[in-house]
Image 1 (spheres, helix red, strand yellow):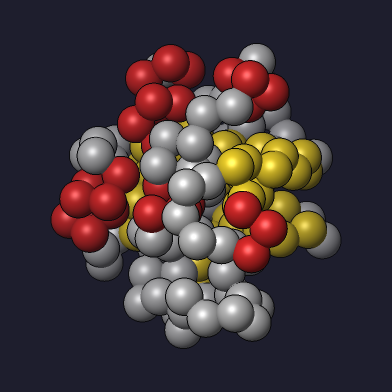
Image 2 (cartoon, rainbow, N blue to C red):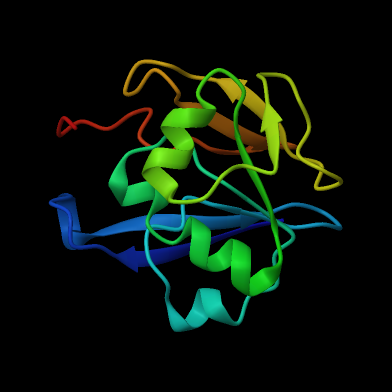
Length: 137
């Protein structure tokens, strides 16, 4: 299961919004919550993670982690970078190839846009963050 949510952000991004995603079978993973939205506030999640630690992807990680009592995940090679950007320490660390809890979601390394950039893969669907971002960063 994959759901996409447009999230308005203050940072300069094309269209003035980024996307947050909820994916997983059983437990659910919230990816890239840049800001709180009413729709996301009503969505049950068990885990929170980001594709990378740029401000337009991490803005509401701490809020949703606290509100949902969700497990916060970060890249094992960049936990300090994550904590500085998200304003919360990770509960768990992942490496490429790892599974996120019991969501059915795995981590794929996709560095380039940012050194800590990853994608989250569930079956034949993937959340790729800014992997193919044409307008720079």
